[in-house]
Length: 348
Image (cartoon, rainbow, N blue to C red):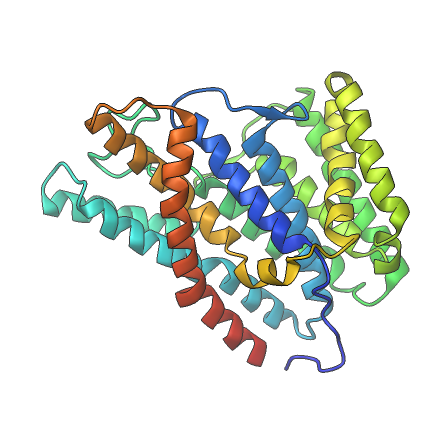
């Protein structure tokens, strides 16, 4: 049962950060689908930075959610239901939409589409369907965003193994979360500096990303263990501005340190410090998951259509056209899937 004694604080900007980061992913991929180099923000490709932000926010919010959950099976059920229904909706929509763009027989498409659906529904990324997008600059890939979902799910599953026993014990939770953050940070630095270069391929996923992205998730978990009053201090906001200035000045030399240490501090500070004027609207609107899921597919479709009609391929054009379709699909997913599921989970 949901505890009646815990007040959930909505007075933050995390929904806005979610939406902004999801849009940044789509914008960066507008270059990727054209095999062009995406713009950088503070020394990092914009879509890579956005994914790091999404993992930071996810780690923070999921850890807060875990602290409010009494039974561990309730936690796991909520986490799986956070990802799975939306994913199934996106996969089903993908198979239906691409049916009309197929180049082979219905039977051949059916077999390929079923395999694509089944693999991705089980969080084992599959990027191809037979006969689709062969001439796109980023050839044959249906949805290049799905690779991160197994990593995110793994972070959800692993988190209680570290923090469930210390849940509600502030000092212990802070110490354990800091230790995990440091361990993952050292692992990410090892990959960054080529100390460790091996790929860890299993179940269709390169699990080195559990380290290089997991550090951002567990940085969010660490900040979730810090008292809200500390996070909302005016000095945090001032320090966040100084962080930006320092990164701009030192970014080439200290980029790795910034990514692992300072970016999470900056994101959590901006998320917690004040309530944006329209934060309530963004909390209700938060369709970031849908934007992330649908963006790449509609970008590939946009490129395909533009090529067929001999329209010049420009990243901004691809972004604007695909974003309209992406926003519509994400809103539909929010209304038909995410909102009803959330209401059910609220009653559990």
